[in-house]
Length: 541
Image (cartoon, rainbow, N blue to C red):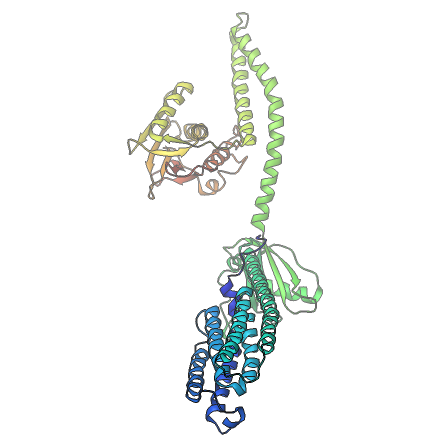
């Protein structure tokens, strides 16, 4: 699981400060309206005569107009740009208003203190301090302007200096608060994103679990279900409009609903396998309450086929290790027996009648050696080493080698193909082993009584363009009841077979990302089909 997420973008963190910006623009609008009221309203005499009446009136109206625009458009655009424009407007009109209205200069300077503090709150520290310094310089500049213009009103330099210290102090304080607010907001956004991410991961895990999970309320309605549970329930119990759109467990699975009712009353679950529908696998239901004292119940549906496959895999693994150890111990004395038989066959003192017995011993020794090789092949499970192979040439060479090593007498074995070349990606050694098993079975069992076997190994491309190999025979075919169990380990219909050949052949094909299936032939006979990966497929890492 991820240990953290990327930091929240500054724009995302600033979006949380929109409410503070709204109050800032509202306060600016109040400032401008107050100036207009003092200059145009019935209380104009409260602040004394302006130094420049027309200039002061024009200034107040301009400030009101711009403050109104900033208030209207304050919720749009970049937050920092809005604050920059606002504080620049405040300082420009505020300093000029202090000069134009000497009787209200101290009050305007006090009101500007909030503007400076709000700007420092909403802007990064360096910009907030910069706004405070600009305000300080503006106050000092306005005082010098007044002094140099011989319009002094008895104000000393201490007044702008004290205001400047106040501006810097309030800017430092609110800038610290603003930084903490932004950091807290970023942390909250990050934690919220992490929580949402973990919730999505948990939901994905539950949804993709192989165990079915159902949440049932006290009235028997299905509140939640993961994908496995929906597949196990099937389409039974469609949404009931009278039950607020939720499926009803009693309709979806009456037996499961009865077991849930008994568990709620008796507290003892019935863990015998249950089949929810005729074409679905059996499941074992388990019940647990969502919370202590809650009427909502979690139902876990364990697919017994998965459990049986795991048990089969464990059993096969243990059996493979045991069989490999046993086969290894048998192999040494068996080699000694075969060697002794060869020496006896070379002796001239053996009677002709006894040589038949030696031939029987040799044949049975070869058969036992084949059994040992099959068991060892099942236990080894060597990984595939895929190579680019031209199948048509490979199959022709395989057929020639098989004929040379295994005398087939009256039987026929031939290689055919619809294309001159058929490139594929496969381990040639493992493909050779799988074809050996299939051809041997076809020559042994794929024949009509009293007739020679006719086997062909056909190479072609299937409907999706992937290379395939068919091992065809003209025998009686395989019944459906037997075909379902063909590839199970140790399943055989012959008194002399081990039941491992086809199982090992399929495992070798799977190791090469290929498939091996039995395909019935309508006109009679049998077909074992290998579908391989194309030459452009990627080899496993």
